[in-house]
Length: 426
Ligand SMILES: [Zn+2]
Image (cartoon, rainbow, N blue to C red; front, top):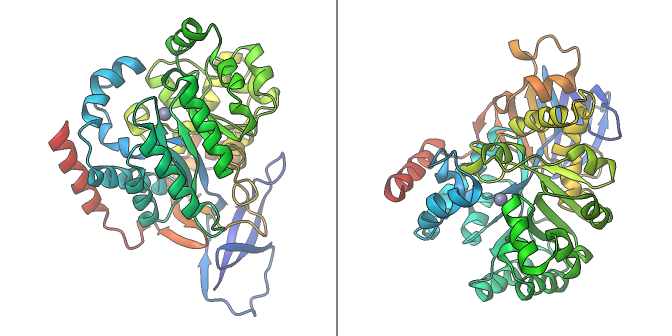
């Protein structure tokens, strides 16, 4: 099947400076075949998409989520992480049923699509239902069962079973990573099991790292090490990693992280909301550490809108460095696209618009009051746009949202289901 997109202003995210030109995009099934000024209109086209007044760019990549946590939006917020988890979240999580996980994940998926995200990286429990929701909404995702010191066996078996099912299928939009919750909730035996499993399955490891000072203190008192040292000594950095947060990273930690495969997922809104701290993105990037953006779960971040993360990431770096040019709009857009793809080890497939890559892209309406005039388009996207400016979303060559309408999905029914679960459990 051939799809031709015409009249688009294409921001391909290739290279170190913004390249925006009016071009056509030819897609063959799920792969971008050609991007050119004028593609021969005589070739047989099955579907034509007129992208007049649209900016077309790679789909946004959310590198750290807990999709099933949508039910906690606004619930008992304004607390520090541990207090919030122990008092508000854990007691309810114990009661979540598989169908609850499905609908809660579904709502997060819809919110992501409606704000331009095409790929996410999720960890939680009951992930078979989250995978169903991801597949039913059409997103691409990396997924893992969150392993802690308790109930390890079942999660390891599930990870192995699903990795064998999806990781060798090059057309699968689902990829399985091993997920270890965090250094302070995974003792050396658990962490080693996770590392060995990732090696056995030839996949990566997703975990939280150095999100709060209290976690760092726990690790220090137990092992007389920093979290990063603890992981290094357990051979975690021999395999590709996605490290969520990375706030309390010292200069000696940076030396250990310099050559990791994968990278850090920066979650600025969640970090602000929980008063966790600020990741020193500028310093980490200067040291060659790859940084992507993520929302975290809705309970701590409030919204899955990656435009919020882009703005907040930019503002925080300008504030902590006191240098307005410490990070530029194009750097932020890279973090939300190609650098996020590198964090997930998917840079050969997604993250830029180039021939040979998967056709994951978003169409942003540019003829709106708050994006006028377009003196500097990347600046407009990062500082002035929001998720609702995304008009259409394509994943794997298929439009899953067009003119802000989800295709074949009853949004009202999804909201009805999640409200019912919230009423029952909260
Ligand atoms: Zn998290």
